[in-house]
Image 1 (tube, rainbow, N blue to C red):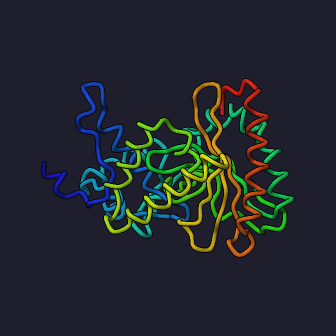
Image 2: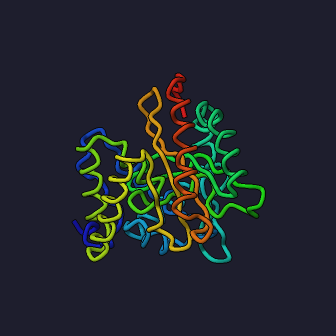
Length: 269
């Protein structure tokens, strides 16, 4: 109970009641690795404790263990830890067999190049979407969000397309999780955006974003693979260059990709 009182309000909730088969120590170790975000270099044990909601003594034991296993490396200059390349071994077996990703990639690259936008494939990771593929037009200098980056489900085009393809009961349950995870005053605006895009999906079969980053907008469509994995494919770019008419045209191109892929036995991402 003492640990629960020390957790910040929006910390990840640890499923202590996950049953006798649930390994809490393993879950905590994974939470430490997940605490690192794009742009992070070294994080101290105190910073990791704040991000995970775990007690600092627990974090100290976990970072020591993860460093001995090669997933973290200690930086003695700032008394913190940075991720090691060895962590890529956790995701490589998944990326190495991404059959659908390899088929979709050139199709998205064609749209990205023609429209001067960034394209992506993502699937759900908790209350977020995680990119498994990112492509850009040659005119775009670099990707701000690369493979492995997570973005919110409820306020992005790529997340809303995923929501639109979920069964109603599952979508309602997920939205309730999102509601209780954030600040109450944000929810009415988030809910309004989701409802607007669910209605758009009913008529157009694609969703717009625009509520996560004021400078960006995008359009996305869902794709259900034959192994029951649901993903979204999307394009986005600067809001000033993407009028609603242009987003609709890109959305139509994304829909055509999905219609073609639905005839193929794409069992793996």
